[in-house]
Every structure is written in C-alpha cells, then in structure tokens.
Length: 517
Image 1 (cartoon, rainbow, N blue to C red):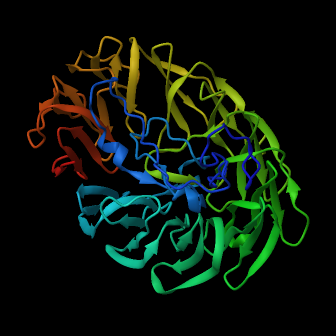
Image 2 (spheres, rainbow, N blue to C red):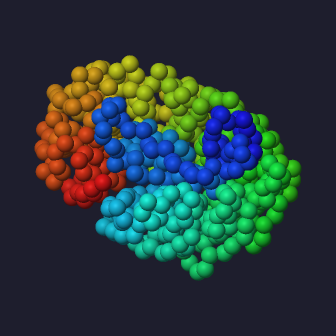
C-alpha cells in the first residue's frame, strides 16, 4: 500500500501518511472521515490510571495535510537531549524568548501564558505552534466536543495581544520566522481553500480557492507550497511566491521551502528532490527530511536510516546513521550545521561535524542523555553509569570522567559546571565540577522524579508524592503552594510543570498557577 501523494510505503489500514501527513484513500475510494491524534505516551505504569497534563500540549508538522488536521506533538521538555537544528558556538544557535504555555484551563476556555501576560480564549484547544524565537504563537481553538471534521478559530498572538484570523479554519502552518501563517478553510472531503495572512495584519489573502490537499510555508513566511487538483490518484504541486502560483510538477508534494523560496524540497514517487530557480530538480534518492537550519539552506535527510546533508540545494554528502544535531536549552534552531556536536547510531554515539560537513568524527560511543551547554561546545553525558564532559566542538576531543556513582539520570547546569543526578538506588545528589557529591539530598520516589529549572538552577523533585526544591545542592524544602499526590515534574529554561491531582505551571519557580482537568 502506497501514499498517493508522496509514494511512501504504508501499513495496511493507515489513514494518514507518516511521511507527508496526507490522508490515505480508503478501499471505498474515500478519504478518512475522522482523525483522532495520538496522545503523547505517558511515563506512568500501565494501569495506573494517571493521565499526563503534558499530553494536552499539541503542535503541528511543517508540512500539513488537510486530513491530518495539523496535529503533531512538540514537547516542551526538560532539555537533557535537545536535538533539532544548528551549532558551532552559542552565537551559531537561534536564541528564543520565553516559550509560551497554551493549555486547556477549563472545559470551554484556553489559557495562554507568557511571562506576566495571560490571555483567555473561548473554546477547546485543538493545536498550536510558535515561531523559532518564541515571540509569536498561532493557536487553533474549536467549540467544545468538536472533532477533526469541524472548523475552529485561528488566533495569532504576538506582543501580548491576540488577533482573530478566521473562524472557519481546519488546519494551519506558522512560518518559523513567525511573520505569516497559511491555513485551510471551506474544507470538503479532505480538500479545501488555502489562505495566507501576514502577522494577523489586514485581511487574509486566498492562495487557492479549492482543491488543496496539503501545504507548507517557507521558513521566512514569504512562499507557500501546496498540492491540489487531485484526480484519479494524481495531483499537482504548486509554489505561491506572494503574488501568483506556479506549477512545480505533477505528483510533487512540497516538504520544505527555504527563505525567499530559493530552495524547494519536495517528494515525488517516494523520492526527495530539491529545486533551485528555473533549473532541473536534483534527486536526493528516497530521502525524508529530518532537520534543517534556520533559513532552510542546509538540510539533513535520511535514506534507509543513513543521514545525508544537502547545502544550498546541492547533492547530499553522506553523514552517519540517524545523525541528529544537539541544541542548548534556551535555543531553538541553528544557523549552520558547521562545527556542531551531533549524535548518531540512534543517539548512542557522540560526534563532531566539522566545518566542511564531512562524515562526523566519533568522540565517544555507548552514551546516554547528551546535554549541550550554553557555550555551544561543552557536552555532558552518561556512559556506563558515569558522567563525562567533553569539548565537542573540535577534532580529537578527549572525554573526562566527572562522576562514577551508579548514575541513572542527570540534569546539568547550563554552563555544565554542576549537575544534579540520581542513582540506580533512587538517591538524589549534587556535584560541582569533578568533586564528588557530599551525600544524598533525598530518596526519590523514582530515579527520574526530578527536574532542574534552568532559569534559577533550582532542582524540583518528588519524595513520598510531595514536591520539594533544592537550591545549589542544599537540603530540599517542601513546596507548599503545590498540593500533595504529585507524580510528575518537568522543567526547562522558562517554566516548571507539575502534574498530579491538579496541574501547576510556574514561570519563576515560586508562584504556581493551578489548572484542573
């Protein structure tokens, strides 16, 4: 069974393509009638009955199919393994502002939180996304008990204000730059009208009035690619340049468009192509895009598990199996893949990608939980229950062992000079540099029941179902503003998330906002 949009092989019974997100035609010739997005997998024991608050935070893929509804999960995780875009010193990474939190705070109310800004939206949260720098958010909100087949209201949130774009929206795609959003209205049988809005300013513009199947917006928000004219298993790919649409190719499904529309990556008959200007497209084999830099000029793609990199629309250079770029916490993208720290072999091996973008040089293997520090060079990781540190920004780097103490899980400071860690015996400890930990801070309920709030460096942990906080490795104190029966704690540079009988969110680690669900 193959996807008729991109040609990818599909399992029997699939409703949507895992490669391009397009709806799969059913045996009766129809598109799927409904779509229930899969929830994020919880970390709780089977049968525990516990539902994660984190599973209520949906986002979308960069290529959207009308049938997919634009729902894919993007987790705001405690960034121990941060891998997505660029590297080579902190100046090479895209700095982001405080990421907003968008949650279903009541049955018929959505709450947007960003610093001290709080915005209420009526309805049920369907999906949302934000720009790379975190300054812009787009959210699709529907009426209570609505499903895939029902339209909703699209909001554009920026500068502490929300603007309603349209109340007849089925899916949307926000540009990485946050400058524009493409969205679908008037959908029928998985085909609809494609529209475009710049920053919520002025009236939305119609790109294609009918028959649009899937679409993608460029990194800078100035170009939109889409597929339309579906008939007898065939369709046509188009590129809209801000003024008019031009035909890309028959059965061509755009996947990624760089700034200015200079490089267009698309799939056709199971193969990945890149097109630049008026010249012929270059085949990148049966590839699928896994990562790209902030302007879309450098793309890492996978062919049968092996990663390749294409720069400025040229033929790809072979990297290694499942190559993935590390990103420091507080950053969301990379300007160039040159000189970055990477993992490969399913994240098992740490490597260095030089400025020529040659095959990554191996630094160490059998690693876990690599953490790239804020300097964009230093990486801490776990290997054989020990913690190591290495300068992963240069050739021939030698790892240094910092801690040998049956380490199960760890959370370094942003500069890598200290870290909290748990042992296989569930002891929580704190270490500075290579000096051994002085003793146990607490005995955790589980070896993974702690998280470091990188804004303050404080460690939140769970002991006997209660939440505690430790500062600079000191003895923990109970967080009185959070109720007992806590079963999950989660943090990054901007927020602390607490999951239990109620959910709590804090932007300073001191004051918590409670949400019932």
